[in-house]
Image (cartoon, rainbow, N blue to C red; front, side):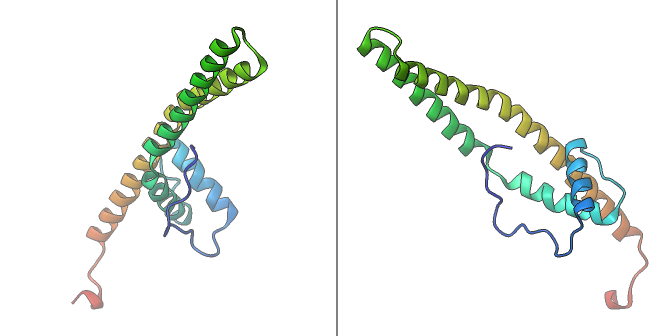
Length: 140
């Protein structure tokens, strides 16, 4: 959700259908598997991508820019003696950064919870399938 590039090494399989990608994104939002094997596999790949993103760096940068702009607004206000155009601009920009952090962090945490739930459900289903499958010739 925040400004996080996709981590290296996480790629969708070639030939992924747009419908499977949409279903996988819905699964991440809901935190539950879809029941469609291909969409669930894509959801697991996307969940790994979401869980590898670093939240603290984006929050630190956004808070830093917000504080810097609020400091500049206060500095311009004290040097001019009144609210000039630049001080109002810095104040508005600083407040926008603060609002972005306040709104985006809970949203990002919510998407992380959904991704973690999808990853755990997919891995649990894969473990249960592998434990109940009959032995193959290659396992001997």
